[in-house]
Image 1: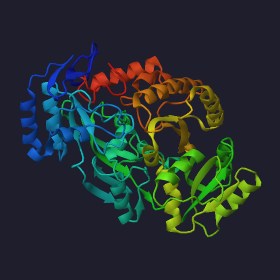
Image 2: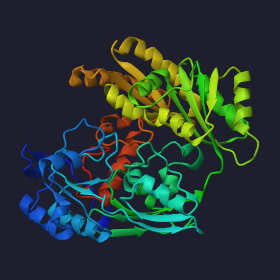
Image 3: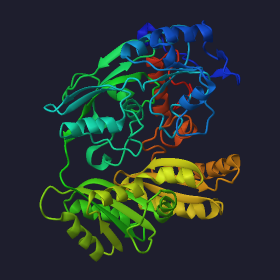
Image 4: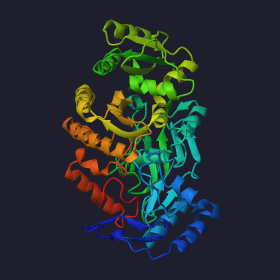
Length: 501
């Protein structure tokens, strides 16, 4: 079988790990034999990107070698910050020739350890590649380098009277390259789709340093395989995204936001159904539990609830209301009459709009302040959500320790649930994660019965690769590995992520 770059890809690497002692001295890969010393490699990197853009201080290695997961100890060889596609190409060509493993890195806001360098990898961080190259107000496109933050993209579109629809709680930190690598979802997916739907073209540097230019702004291009989709969601295992052409939209008109209280989860999908049938243009549909609400009120400065009494569940509904008639008010009346909600409040100004969204967007940060957290990011078909949640609650009656809280929230409009197991900070961390892991395995087994996914939008990384079989068949995983071997037969790109070879 012919492989990429003329290399046969049968018998691809069997192990992708580096041995590293605690002084960060690079030893040898099981399947690679680096033919360059650490000192020689760092000298080359400095010649490419400049001395100040190669970090080797232990504190920098700890900070830049990890992401928000905080589970695995980061042990990179060094952090290298290129400023151009050419520099990324030179770095990868060198690492390829010398068989050095590479971990691509962006804003490092991931929650599955996809950007964690644990075994002496060279971290290539793209934060210096932060130029917005072009905003086309006629073709409704934006071209940017991979290190531009999502919020900066939104602001660039806004300056032209347009709208970039990818919206994430971490938008001020996460970068578009990382969004593409993980196929990030966000709160607007129900209306606009996730990252994949926003990408028109890509520029990617392959493992051997070759630049694959798919960076076109065509909305229609039916000329063979659309290779860019292989890299979207690949978590940096097939190539490093350096540029992207993204779709823009007309700015939404007259957004209205309501927060609703309800007493049963089964009513939430029904609220979504009735809202859709009412003909309102839904731009976001989120939910969270009373437990999540209480934790945010406790830890978020200035947070306040719009309700006199707390309820078991809450729904945040955002709609675009281009006409003069207040559609959301009549919709709420319908939902009250149907017995689906017990209370509701409509944001009447920008301050309330921000406050209501803050109750949802600050859950993750508040959980981190509240206790130790283990997260599951799952998805199901919407019509299976209620059955799954009931089965989950029944499972936890016997499985969950008394001092562990279950916190649910998520993008219910696209079937995405975030399951959070939370214990006091005083608990022994290893014991907590061991107990949560035991529950997690049972949850994934339950999820498989409902034909769900163990990862809705955060990826697989290191944390979920042992559970990939709950979502993907053996044949699917086999073809993933073959694809990896074609694009990266030496196995230098983000080794150990998604699966082991």
